[in-house]
Image (cartoon, rainbow, N blue to C red; front, side):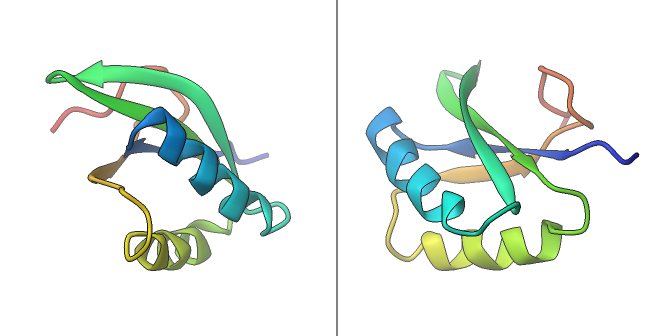
Length: 86
């Protein structure tokens, strides 16, 4: 079985609740976590994206950026707790 794909989203905690609500409306697409990392003083929240749903997630994320305060995103290294280098 393929592992979930990890994305990290830089947003405020209040904003991540809104993002979670929207993402949750798409059954089985992704799971927004309250787990976060600090990277260069910025807070990133973890999102597990279901295998085969990455393209749909990225399309939704692009639409969310128009109405949510998402400052940065990047794909993690598998489902590790630490972000990918780069």
